[in-house]
Image 1 (tube, rainbow, N blue to C red):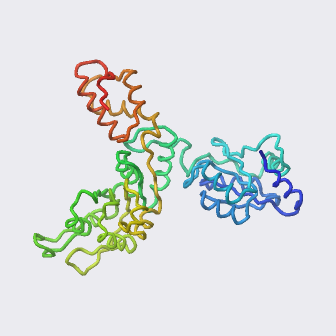
Image 2 (cartoon, one colour):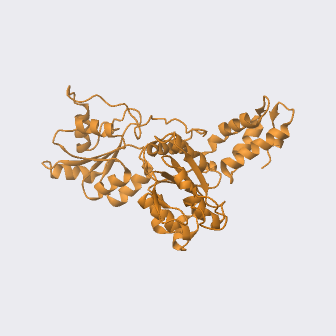
Length: 388
């Protein structure tokens, strides 16, 4: 229902322009709507993200919010909840996901929204043509990420986030449970970026002993330690011009975190045994399944490093939250592991869809690989081949 206080305020101060906030990451859509509403009736503001919109709305600059549901930082429902808490007098008018036009209740029960409807419908040959509707400058249904399968809303949102930030050098922190595909997303960020022809270097912070990890990251000069018979560049320097993927960043030893922070802030590395610094141009993507905020409280992870790495955090959804993707994923793994024509019976698919998948996509991949072996010469994978 339309807030009655909004109408009362509009009638009480008809000479004061009503604050209208256009919220969309699509700049062309914002400009188009602003051009339609340049009548003096509205005090127009624009915001490209949920956080920016909340700041402007809270400062009293908005009575009506035209909301694009595809925000880069907040889910639309989450944005509405925060707006209701911070600015309860503001009314939200959603933008149509295809046309980008405001979905105003018709006939509008509020005088201010009636005026908004008239403004939008009034013919004007000088108004620009509607822009192609996009989200974050991308297609409404973003293309799937390389080597990733899924078309649920959670996966489409993930694809949009990755494609949005891939073109920039912004540090990205991938968060998610084990087996959700953080390594695939990291590689997609590289392959969709201008750095795609440069190296993609991976280092697993949990797989290399602490005594060797510093040398692996930063390199060393001849004689820096026993066994250093020749100089060597580190993984950071090896990624020059490309992308460095720091997997399991939550397991990076505390003593190395300050050195990594220095590299992130200054773009320089210093090899072990040397006083010289080397300039490097590297885009950093980090990933973890650890609760870094808890580790910060327990003084196991530096707070300043966390904020430097998480300029653009992306959370990967667990498989149980996109269960509709189980079937296409299962068929994808079937093509990967089956050496012959093999189907999956409906009963087997039902068994797969009923499972909670604590191991996420990695667990599903292992289940299908095992089922391909167990099916042997049969025409289809049956429920008894699905071992969970």
